[in-house]
Length: 405
Ligand SMILES: Cc1cc2nc3c(=O)[nH]c(=O)nc-3n(C[C@H](O)[C@H](O)[C@H](O)COP(=O)(O)OP(=O)(O)OC[C@H]3O[C@@H](n4cnc5c(N)ncnc54)[C@H](O)[C@@H]3O)c2cc1C
Image 1: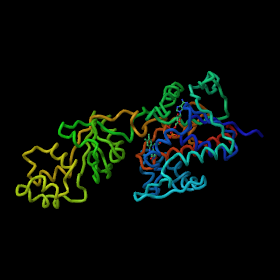
Image 2: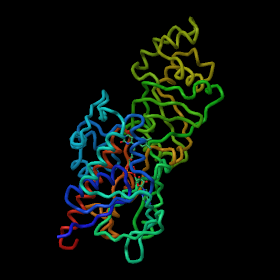
Image 3: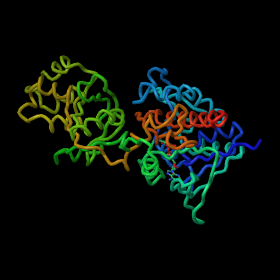
Image 4: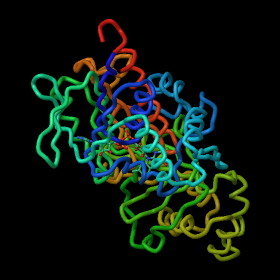
């Protein structure tokens, strides 16, 4: 019997992983990609060290996703251990960093991508770059624009792995949204995630922009659900960095609901307030700078206190201490999606069946960041993309082998 013909559109981590599973199962696989080369965002993710997954226990791991119960069966099928084993199979060793994050030993994405593509090629996967998907023809074929004009393809099944809308120069530009919406697919608006936020600083802070705020704690609202430790950096437009990425979901929700969000920082989380008050007891006897420095308050942290606390309170230990332990920053918006690391929103869960097939468009499946889930950086994004790629591919196999497939 002829192998079934599967088309995957989008050659990012989700699409390539779907191709991996389907080619291993003996399917005839074509990947269509808009850009002149594949995996551009994946390569960009590797620039600062490719944090591919995380070693924490599954219960903690899965709780990082906003739609944990949706992602759970997917991540169960392709969890951190399987990602590490898959890399090893490709000859790429990995290590667990001190924070529990997992990286390929070479840190970059390029060596892994090279080996991955070569293994897919050996299995007969065909990659067609410069093929921009434009939607469906009236009879349900896939329509692409190419350098040689329009091309139509009619496979047995299709996996869309078109990404979100962040960093559109790398390929994923969200133009699939109106195409699928016109077919009646429910799509939650694409929004920036893992992004910087807008805040206004006085001219006094200019000298401190671009400098890191290290070892701080941040939270939103009463902090019950969303406390994060990490780093941030003040910028001309506001504030950015790992701490903000982790909190981007609750911050985004507040900004969307009320037009602003308040981020609270504990600038010295390793010292409790009573201890800090006693360390600041020399205020008034020694210079403010000296006393603050001895208490651990210098550089950007000291500048923030000067920015946020009236001058007549700088020598009042309780006021300084209260400001250090709960420093409010008024965030007035998010950075544009083009500058965000990832995209929240996308094809909604109810638009898909249990195999990730679109209910409104039979034989068309979806995977990766174009699905409506969100997670912080830390390896959770790539894991979600790999895992949903595996899951959609297995969904295609189950669907095609069923009597109605
Ligand atoms: C700077 C940066 C650093 C990051 N670092 C990390 C990290 O360390 N760890 C982590 O887990 N995640 C990281 N990420 C996020 C991660 O790279 C993405 O979540 C992941 O690449 C999304 O995979 P995807 O396959 O769903 O989509 P994409 O990687 O966006 O791939 C989608 C592909 O579809 C193609 N495409 C789109 N539309 C069409 C069309 N109409 N026709 C044909 N082709 C089309 C695009 O060209 C693209 O190649 C980072 C992202 C950025 C921007």
